[in-house]
Length: 323
Image 1 (cartoon, rainbow, N blue to C red):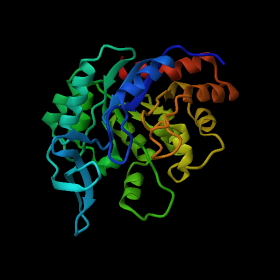
Image 2: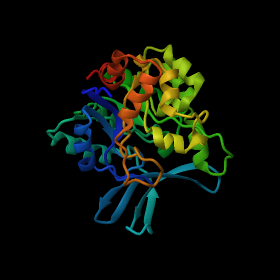
Image 3: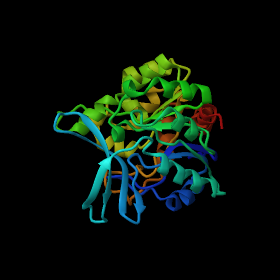
Image 4: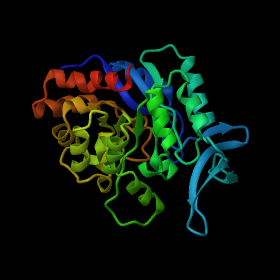
């Protein structure tokens, strides 16, 4: 099998996340170098946790109040998960965790080169705070994770759109869907982030947008995105996505073959989605580093050219992020 020596990892995470992996940088870097990654774009964990003297700190979680209104709060817990205290979430709740990542990356002199997409809360971040964040080095994009913020594209304020355009920075969005019975608020959050909604939002606003998770194999979303110059589609994490078929438009025999056949090669970007590159949710210590091999195998099977692979692994992300 041919190797493609230059890869941009277009989307991943460093840092701990509530109900998610630890996403340790020291685990990522040697594996990324081994498989030919020369540039990486990362955000903090989607629902970040920070270890403090007071305990494990979550700057922003969500829940419904007695009236059914969605509220946001911060929380301190002990290592056993016992809640120590909570309080109402503040403005710009991710400021500290974004700054921690900035400082860590600024001190790093490594291969691959690391760039940042700070996380953004559409309802709680302020315009001045967003401007300041986007001007921090080495920021190349902004990330919205609609599940951790219980938001969808309709919640993105006009100032976010205006600032992204003024700063010439793209947006990376988590996409989701849910085809099962709604039994929990998180299922509603999945549906808020349907890839069709995000693609239509990107078309309407003109914001350069990376649609993650293969647009959940939504034929409508992919068709719309394929005609839009400002949209690209991320691939990962293929095995985890296949393990949760209710969150895909349909369950294919082979996710990568289906996606590569549906999306033009000039619209796809390679991403690992570290540390969600696992076979099954909650099996966070068993990381998968072979997706690039599966992409090549699936691509050759459906007739992709070497130039198509070069675009997917490197060229498309360089152009999208202006690297």
